[in-house]
Image (cartoon, rainbow, N blue to C red; front, side):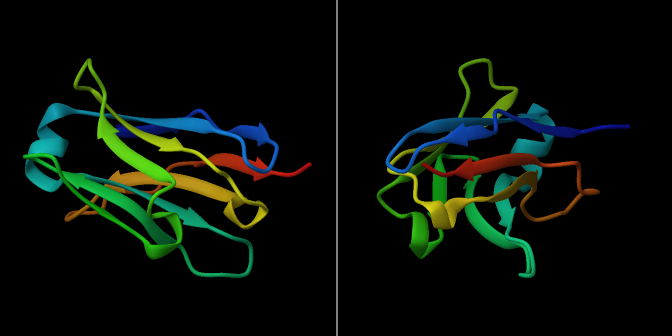
Length: 114
């Protein structure tokens, strides 16, 4: 049973923008919050941003001022708005429950290159 599904990845030029979407149920969001993670080949998966009920958010230092995590208008998605993208942002991005991690999905690839 799939509970969270990420989408929206693609190829963008440095300095460009991209928005990722995570389909997440309202119950998961309310109980655990939702977070975006990324994994660069050869490195450990790392937290990018997280959002919890009440609108509380947290960001990794490397994305502060560039990325914004928010709950979609339909309240069944959590979006990651990415701006001023850098080649270093190239990675496979995943979403998951923040406090009670579910099984990992396939992720969505973000490639930043000229």
